[in-house]
Image (cartoon, rainbow, N blue to C red):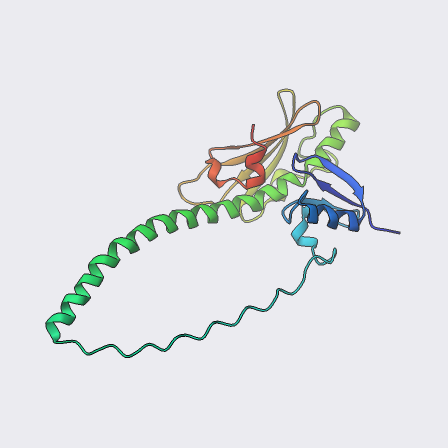
Length: 225
């Protein structure tokens, strides 16, 4: 029997069932990408497409790198006229290079720090978003929002990983929420969490609390309320 797949489109809505060929075609058209969440009945939870790329035959060997062009042989430098000239040249190079190095460091270090925090948040986000289908199904069958301890929903701390302290399921306002409480993001980021909210029409919006938007995964920033 042909394996049936499901995937979350760019509006975070469930699509499927589709065949593996249809899933590969959607990737080629640009309708989905390697970060798109997918699922089939043999998977325990929704996972990014990149995680099952081998199963779909999407991985391939990269083309060989082009050979480096032969370096042009440089003529040996002429000897300096004296020690004084050498010292002047070295001093000039140091004076010119230090500001450039400082500018590059000022740009690169904060960008790398943002990327590091964002990758940590993404690991917690994947756990939270994989539970959206379970929440929606429970709401339809029970006519209420699930809570930790309900059938199919474990205690909040059981979902923990390195950067996820706990995962809470609760009723909020006009719908249900999944609250991912974060940890180990850095000394300056305390009490942060991700909130995934489903309204009565089963439409999802997402937001971060005590967390700058620049630290959120790109897919989550598109769905912020």
